[in-house]
Image (tube, rainbow, N blue to C red; front, top):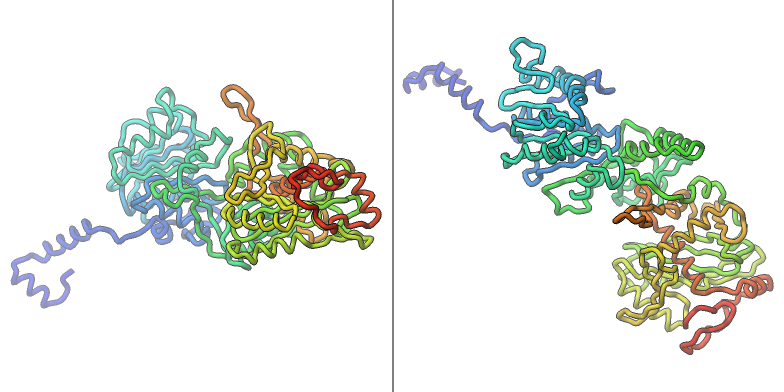
Length: 627
């Protein structure tokens, strides 16, 4: 704008009228590109939350729920065409849709389509959520006139604004999904969409088709999931980048997602999956999180998963209480609906019809205090070892007559598995003696170690070394599928010709679930210690019981599969007990002989190892072991 006298004189000399200059200034301002701004930046600068739809009315603040920022700004990424959000309730997913709408109305005008499951829900969304946002956000108020205003040209389901328009549609109405081309397609609660919009076909595909003519189109799909195998949002999530919100452990600094399987009810903490520390909700939520993608190269379709454990509006104590209520309903009345709703709306995960499994609470509740390393009744020790990227996980199990079992120790050895000294630590650990209250002791009779993972070569080299030392330590490799026995076959088909047992892992899981459901002490019963130093905490028990048998129908026939339960529960304890069980099956002990030796205080493992003959040994301990 010309204000100074020299500028006025210069304009007069050029023969340009002052009003003309002002006009050109307005035109330049109107056609100039707006400053670069993301959806989250727009929301922080302009958005106002309405009192009737938010418990925290007033200025929007993305930092209130920082996991929302990356999702909002994915909309602005030119490499990203689709944004998928599979989430629980109470994480602000509807606000993500509203912020995107506000951004495109005010900052980057475009034709917008918002699809709700039904026309009635579309009307409710327009009246109860969209209209209050427009009314209370000054940047929008002057651009979208009220539907009741005279000559506004707007209705509840269709609103115009400078440079664009917004249409609210129902997935059950083919007419509302037809005609207008749109650039921004926002699809809410897609798991509640009908399979077909009338006779026109899948409403998601119909909405997507409307965006075809726009090179810079955006498709945003949001929903709480429902039934596994039928959930549309899960199918969309799995074909995207699969990003989880992760936070660093306040103790060890390693990033990890919020997982129900690591929540401890007793002290309302979440256990770090790396260092094992129990950390409070407040301490976890004070950490600066980030999304970690399973498939970071899938940039065109970014998919995000969120659960209520990350929400600033829902506390863990309340989540635990709701879980217990759902669990009580399931136990007392056999009603799965409350638990199904809890899985969908709290964990943001699909519900899957499952077979019977053991109950976590009953196993946790029956733990007992051990007065010595080995309780009376156990006469032989075996070990299972799982090889992880930065550690060994180990379980030592005691066994008695009828395969009654005692969890002796669940432990971890951390280290660099590329280095030989880390494997030496494992060997030393497996050489330890464990004592009865009487003072007599046992060594571990047989160990099974998983040869899969990233350190197969190192594992084979170590196993070869153990063979030379005549130690009963065997590699194992799992094979899924029904009808395969736990000890399927012995193979030496590997680069170092070491002995590797092929395990029928599904059979092992069947055996374990049967034993976990045994309620009377004696054959098959599983004992677990409550002693804090043994490692058998809630996380272990949940991990032991982390999978369930599910019957699927495939090609008209029932097919049994073992699947992980919801909640991100890690299944290492289950694998370890399978390996430890395989070890005792390999030994096939003579219980009567071993009971007499233990009663006499004889540590039968301290005898000299037998020479290799290539034949089966027939000693009490060694029957079934090929040396």
